[in-house]
Image (tube, rainbow, N blue to C red; front, side, top):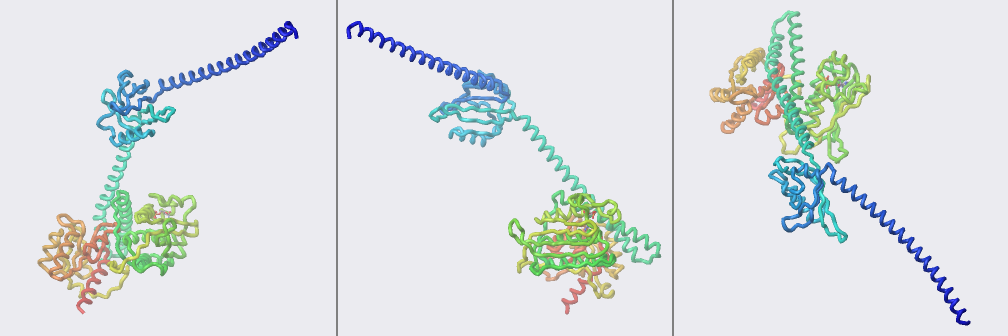
Length: 574
Ligand code: ADP
């Protein structure tokens, strides 16, 4: 190859290289341009995001504050705060920057919350709480504060960002609502107390009216007079039932009902409860029966008075709403499904009018009666089932009903089953009706001390006792006088009112029993109370009284109890 050929070849290679390099450069430039565009777009995006974030933070309604994370030199300082934060706290931004946020705390700031806050921040955790802080002008405000740690790429906390919401208004509303609720509750308790007091007050004259009509009824009257007295007697009895219901529900709602646990035979309670209504059932030609499963222990521990009241309410309803057929009361032992504990399951089943489906869920409500026209015929207040339900609830039991209109109803309740221990004193449940063969001569020999502060009651008791042949009756107006009389003279029986001024019947009985520890005697004390609530009986018996009669006292009850006293006395002699 000659020189020119060689030079030509070189030139051609060079040209090719230049073309290749040009191409490569063009490609590189293109790439660069693309990358620059990307970077530019990214930058734009970041810028836009930052702008939006900034606008959000600046204009947020919640206060936003950023501090450093320097715990030395008096703790983290504010490096940024938004307008809202300045507005909430009342400080200008330049007054805030460089300060520790604790400048906002004051006397009522919860120290416990602050401790938690500090602990969270130290350990790099986020924190959320409600806190009371103080504005620049000293007025406190409530805030809902959320703080998050901000970490760098190495995971080190460099800042804290806090969002604070002023919840003062919300807190005030809550407080106001709570106060209003408390006021309403207090008013409700006051109302219940008023009702309880009022019905108690009305009972005293009502008892006198009923007692006197009973005495009147047993005197020589012509047919018309007898009918009139009977109407008077029945109306006052109905009024007393209503009063008792109002008294019961008021006491329950005022939270005044305390349970009285005693040991007794549940079998005897069923027997006695059925016996109580056997006369009425006979009149309506309805069969009434009871049965108890042998698995239930002989003696149990529960609130005797409440169980009697529950049974009385359910059985009286069954009788009221049944015109033919049977009423069956049964009790068995069961296991509670949720905790496998023993319970008593009691059922009162009737073949009466039943309850319409649409009413069945409401009949435990106050004043609720399934059928107004039916109820007009039968009477009642619509409180019985409410009281019953509340009593069962108080005793940790359950209550329910199944019913078919026109076929009958089954009301059931359960109660915890606790067997009485051998050492327990078992309350003696007296059969409702007991025939006593006590002659008038024996009664006439008795000396009785009647303790009651109410003159009408005293008059009534004297008349009642005179009717049954007891004329030797002394009176005492209160417990103190009773103690004095008992020192002076030997009595056979004390009739003791419970609520009296100076010294009440409970205190007097306690003192009498204390004195008797020295003398070795035991005078029978019969409690007479206007207290309708169950539980009173147990209280009287626990304190040392021997028998219990709740007002209005009926002639046959007082005869049966005094006869009992004589029988006991005679059996002790023999
Ligand atoms: P009342 O004083 O009206 O009997 P309760 O609270 O005891 O009040 O009962 C509420 C209502 O439930 C009754 O008025 C009646 O409509 C219905 N009821 C209760 N027990 C029975 C029953 N055994 N059979 C049919 N209806 C009943």
